[in-house]
Image 1 (cartoon, rainbow, N blue to C red):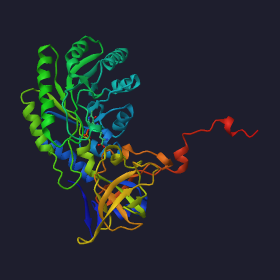
Image 2: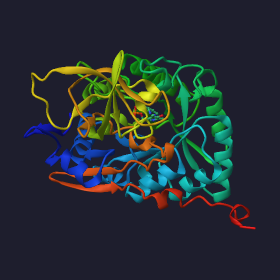
Image 3: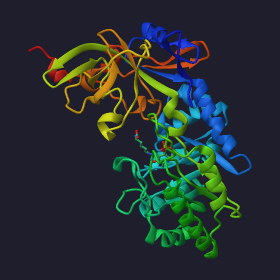
Length: 424
Ligand code: LLP
């Protein structure tokens, strides 16, 4: 569900005409619906009502401060994977007590930062990390609450580039080593074992692999408790899929919550969720303008002012994004097949191949739907293009929540050494 729809024949976000945003901000730009963000957070909260649960929004999906502030006001916590994400979450008003710190490569300064703020939990991914965390915590006179992220060796559909829970993936503690590492954790002075963590992948529409992974985790929890560990939390990660196109029907949050309630019944644990895409994905679009229509013998290219540096998902994962004209086409308007591409000097700078679109012309604006998650966060300034701006809509107002940098800002961190600038 989202708040993008045609009104008076132009695409709107809530009460705002996307043409007005494009006129004011220029394209490319991202536009987010605060109502959709709030709605998704509430749907998840409602689905888990009655379960002891922490919704730790996965900041990597969309870490704009205005988005994090929106979700903080809905009571969300945060799942972070770097000191930077942690500082974003804290700055947006998410309390440290609702922050979990995931990721395979935490550094000592990041651990230090998290410990001094008193975060809820570290999700530890290796023996080396566990030992370093114990040392860092001991030096601070603190104890780090930890879950081990275990790799349950369960294949979850989705694109191979976003699957994480199979043997051979770099993520998590190999299943066969988990219990031994818990035993070691119990002996480390700076560590308090509090839970088990798992995350098997992203854009998973089918609950079967998730259930299989969670059942294995429940079994492991029983064995860990029998061995004397006090396991009071299970972090089930993120991964719930969203519809990207008509006909997609991923499992909804209500079914997901029901499955978790069933699998974890009677366990007496706090369930930690790390949803990213399911909250952010359909809450944002990227706007672009058609620059040129370029006929080739076997196809027609539509060259846009947005490139793969602005929206990486098609280049990285062959991802599909629906493309809608901002000016609504008549229902019976003829369509044509276009290869929709950007201006970047890379062959992978291709958003869609042979996509049927109503006839468009230079100057027309297009909206890439479902671009709220892993859109702006993955953007870069490749080809010396300014980072794409972001706009947040609230009812009939919109605010720029990240502006387009000027050229001077783009180069302000660079310095030419004086031996290159001396004249003689
Ligand atoms: N927790 C952990 C440990 C994760 O690694 C991830 C995503 C999440 C939670 C959030 O997963 P979500 O609910 O968003 O599926 N850039 C890719 C997706 C990468 C996902 C990385 N990890 C894409 O655009 O499809």
